[in-house]
Length: 243
Image 1: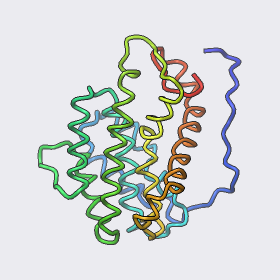
Image 2: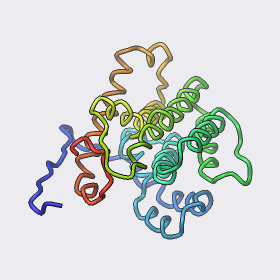
Image 3: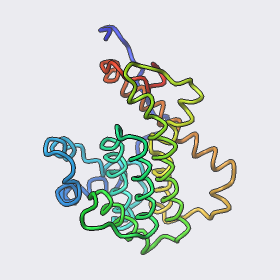
Image 4: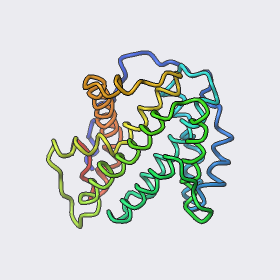
């Protein structure tokens, strides 16, 4: 890597709003790891715990002051991040089967005792949402998580698992990265955080859908700038808009 590389630092054009419950799940999060993420190596768990991924949920929804409404959102922030990390190199056929199982659990099926613990976290989040969110919204989250895997993660496989570095064309890159970054299902969390589920006819409006797409693409580009120096060190890495 060039030592003189200067990477522009992304800055938000608005002030930071501090969440009143920013660190509310620090202790709970550790329990979730110990109970439901045992499929991750001990070393991996040691890396995860100090990151406090649940804080991402509270910082990204800083006007929410309800621990009950934010708890399932914090769960999702952790399991969507670790899902991508853990299953990122899974063959397409196996990943598709996992996507279908995730959809079943998000729609109401309970995980079996011997199934991977991440499904238990998904089921717990869904049951918590069921106490205060309408069914149409939970269906929406289930579909968007499914698409995160099918249209995002699976589309990345030819580039992640190639023997040598190959680059997608820019339109193709943007078409699947807007899903694989995970912001489509994560953007849905604005609704429970504000206790304002968008009605179907508003949510499906082309302008709202375009706003969702732009939300995802902004995060894609920001993420690529933030991770550039690290990814330049990876010989096969090609999924960065700057590269």
